[in-house]
Length: 189
Image (tube, rainbow, N blue to C red):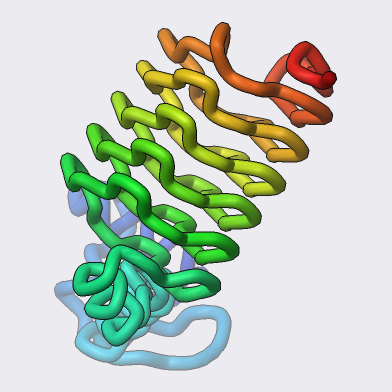
C-alpha cells in the first residue's frame, strides 16, 4: 500500500501520527512532489538540509587558532565560531580578523586591537573592553549585554541590531558609529 501526499503534508503527518491520513511509517513508499521514496530514503532526505545548515558553524581555521593561542596575535585570520569565553586576551592583536559568531563572553580584552574585525553575531556578554580598538569593526547582531567599556574606541564601527542591554557606553568613544538608535557622534573631536 502507498500513500500519496505533498512534502508538507508528509511532514505534518510525521509530527502527528493520529491524523486521518494513513501514517507514512505504515507504508513502504511515499509519493510526494519530486518522486517516490521509501520511508528510509525520506528520513535521509529530511536530514540533508540539517547537515547543510550545520556546515560552517564553528568553521574557524585550526592553524589560525593555534597561532593565536601561542602568540596572542592573528591579524586577518579566521577564528569564526571559536570559543574564547572567560579567556584573558590582554593586548591581543586581531586586526581585521573574522570572529563572526565567536564566543567572547567574560573575556578580558584589555588594550586589544580588534580594528576592522568582523564580530558579526559574536557573544561579548560581560566582556571587559577597556582601551580596546573596535575602529571600523562590524559588530552587527552581536550580543554586547553587560559589556564593560572604558575608553573603548568604536569609531566607524557597526553596532546595528546588537543587544546592548545593561552595557555601558558612557566612557566609550562613539564617532560615526552605527548604533541601534542611529549614527552616534558623541565622541568625535
